[in-house]
Image 1 (cartoon, protein in one colour):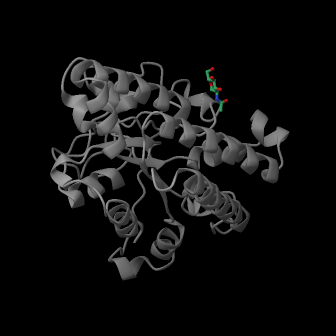
Image 2 (spheres, rainbow, N blue to C red):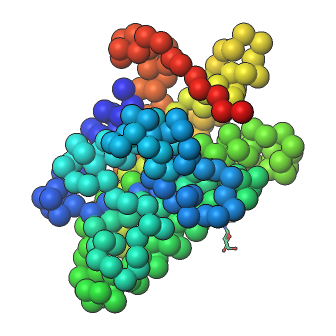
Image 3 (cartoon, protein in one colour):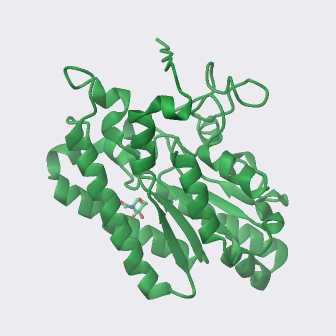
Length: 294
Ligand SMILES: *[C@@H]1O[C@H](CO)[C@@H](O)[C@H](O)[C@H]1NC(C)=O
């Protein structure tokens, strides 16, 4: 399924990596990757710090992960034999923990600043990159500029963002972006913004990046609820696939400018996740239980 596929892509990305024991990862994204930043955002309404989040995680308590168990990032880190980096906001700027990587992901966040605005507070991708810039300054102060540059060049950057630009922005008809743009215009805005953001990460020293494409968002419960029979919304899935193929082209284009000094990989999780949704029993999933908290 998607997770294994992502691991395969990551391992390809790591072919020339230093031994995994010293591998540093910086993680950017939304609720699919968050490990607890939003717990530190007092006003944020996008929180996962209550039951039944975390029931299958070590300790059985909610940690700020938007899942019953581990995130994809936790699983990839375990496969690589390294600890999953802690949430950026939980780490002191002065300590040595930052030298081992950090997770900037924030539930509700998007490529666009205005995405998820009704959650009041999230770390947008722009803000996450700002935080990484601060991290780099802290690392420089600790180990010197040369070593800091080396650490940032050798680290792997795992990025998964864009779902909320659909689910909590474009697909909400009462928000400005939905009424202002056609999908063609919206996807161009997302891609041009993402291009600048990945370029900014490159300028800050990122040389090995993996970007996770979007899954079939038309199949999430909130979207299915809009169809009369609870089916996947094919229009939404088409838009997502359009986004994914444009990101792939963007990455080919960026690689042509940066190769061989940098390599960006596109991890296409869409087909694997769709397969899981269509054939759950093939993956050992028999009953899907939905918990609602009112
Ligand atoms: C997001 O907001 C920041 C700070 O106001 C701004 O510099 C940046 O250009 C904005 N990015 C986008 C994509 O709108």
